[in-house]
Length: 191
Image (cartoon, rainbow, N blue to C red; front, side, top):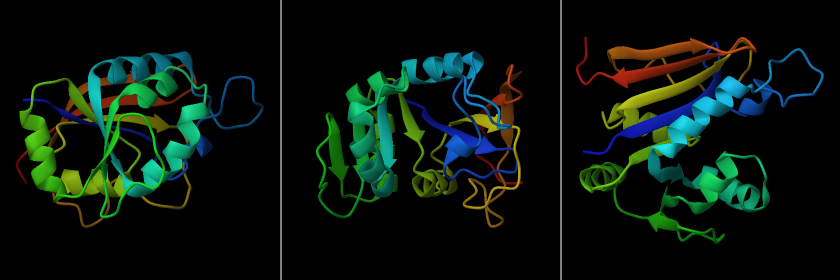
């Protein structure tokens, strides 16, 4: 069965909105750590295993305007060519290569998608979708890029009302700029 892999950038205290605040591009002068070569290598490894991406409607609308003309490799090449399923209740208003609207209940659709042959299924951004799939027990792996910054407002991946889940550490790696790359397998049982 295919894995659902949640890849997200976050601050140390769990903020996930506007992750560019947590990592700068090399050469920019600021106190925020840069998105370094170890992070790029990690991203390449994660996306190389994926042949499908799930997106929420808000993320799709933002990304469909940005990524087709962006040049932020390797993600640009990946996201523009991969099969994208957009969880939405209305038709897509912006065309994007390999994007398809999904109008059926998300849990039912994702269970069916996991049962099909293929590579990993990625969730990138789309925090509300990620939270709903975590709550439904459908996420198999967390790929977290944690920036050494705190104090940002906005949404958190994990909220106070999350059910207890056991996470098994698969990999932890510090990066040259002070971030940490964390891979967890998501346990299925509550405490």
